[in-house]
Image (cartoon, rainbow, N blue to C red):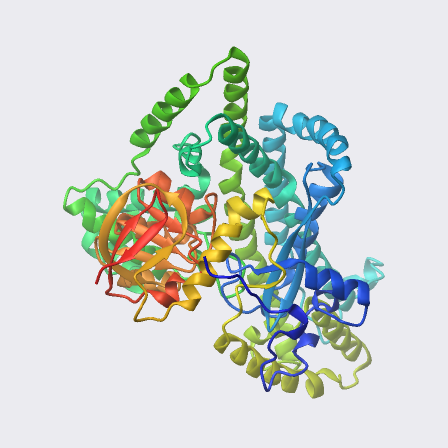
Length: 610
């Protein structure tokens, strides 16, 4: 294995022309040498680049979700449910890229006490999961309703007379500030809810994995994940709606119109006939809420949802129409996944020697299957449905800053931190209140122009996979199952980077979904590239999100740069019965479209054969 060497975080490269970039982000995200204790801590920890969530540098505003989960994940681990071996996850930023490190419980003597608290608190949630989950869903629908109805007021020349006649005692300027605060608060609140169940979902799975690995020392991690496969989750629903619309178009004889793939042409064509209007009615019914699925991960403001660009779902639906016309099956192979799940469960359960072990196995597997849907379902409610509405509400706020000439374009607001937006709004409302000229137009246009240049340089830079000190053994369970970060994977990443292009014959990743295939690869860096996929190709991507679902109808396997056995790409490939290798480190930069590879999803090996 190649020796793992990563930069000292305090000696990491500074990109010429970006000096001062630190002011774009929260101050506590900075690596620093000013305090000896903090410096020693930062150099002694293992900071890995979170490319799973952030495949590009962070816009100053978009870091809000990283701030939100920095708090939320950590608090539920350390202060609420008391996960026995793990505290929170610490965050830093360098050259616009997010680095994180899991914080273990440092005193082994504390773990038994934490186990007792965890069993009581987490046990209550596991025992009351359905009731609490229904309550959670109600809370999420409420915050989505609130953000949808939230009015971002525009500032009038003169207040309406009702302010006087009703004795309101407040102005539109105050309401604007309050609306912005409410918008941000709803975002942070949503992320509190995001992690209310998520850590428990992963924990139940991790405990089941731990039992299986001790009971069956040679069991591949992948086979354990297959025992919780075949479970229906709502994150598949947007894709299922497209399939239903594709079938309806064929049944109604309007499939030729639907295949135009362009919103204007499709809508105009459909309105011309009774069957077309019937199809349009079904299409519009599906949009609420299922078309609030993001075209990306939902973490970035530019990850617009289907409702923002209907050409995306219309184009994807065309894949299904073409397959239906050929009498090809477009359903997920759920029954075969369930049959394999039951076969593996029966076979491994039979290997257990005692009734106690079998009872424990049944209990842990039952809990894992109960909580598993949340691990995927929360994505639709938070990252997709809520985020899509949130981003557009922020654009309403930005329109006000444009009107007052603080920024030149609505999309410029993302170059301001959320605290800076609040400061700018104070400048706006006080200038409105006094009739005096605000200072913002003298400050923000040139600052935004500078930050755009910095971001361009960040995008051209390749962040190191990690910084700091690599531990002898990475044991934090969430890091392993979600990000695919293990001592072995880090060694493989280092080894891969050391091999020249001419000498590269094999790439090792994390086994995501079993199966052996051979085929041509196509590198897709975003969902916009999915349209270029040809039938039977092997998808190579940084990561995937639910809006990539139609691609899984075309491909024969998937490879990703980042992710562990519980990442989205691995879960979806198992549900579609497709081989997958995740967490390769840099497959998108080392593989080229048109190359032929042989992929073994059970072993995590990719052989380059042409």
